Length: 279
Image (cartoon, rainbow, N blue to C red; front, top):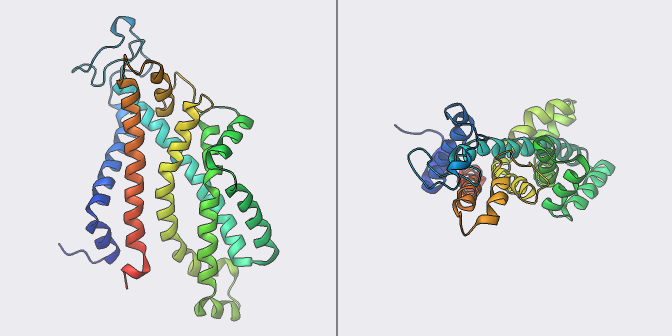
């Protein structure tokens, strides 16, 4: 079957990105559908089964109080990916709004917003998230908000640059001359040109968002135990790394695989949406 979309053909030509997309889909399905398909609870304890090895009953063994590690990884995926998705969505919404206001209206509006974003960019994303969690408190929702605030600068700057470039084109200038409203120009002529870049940036930021969320939980200020978030699982297993390596290896592989796949998929999308590749 011949694929008509050149962008899709370019993406599919990157075999590593296609493989990463398939793995990402599988991980997402396992995270959000797996908890409804497992018979065990991630909080179920059985001290007599502590530190059990890999078996047919326990695919990744059990932890220090007899909880099934595979079940906790599956449930933890739902929490970790959910926080990353929630946080990046916050970053997209606020970043788009600030980027359009700054890029389209320019002047004093652009100066104020740009200086605010420059201030945020001067602070590492993890530090922004840490300060936010310190103010709001720990928990899944607050961690997601903290992650979202740390991703705003990347979305805002990308949106601003795209809006400035598109609004200088002849067809946008013509629309403004004949009196087309700003909202219609933005939604009809500018937004379609920004959305592909938003998709790429969104995908690339998912991995970063999950890393930040996991780091906060690892430090004990994000999602707290016994909630099976991947960063919290990594933190609880680090004390027994030599006697129980699965406690670190399992969540570590899950985090690494998710970050790697989102990065590879983002690279594939960037190549597919590159204007030079579709000329």
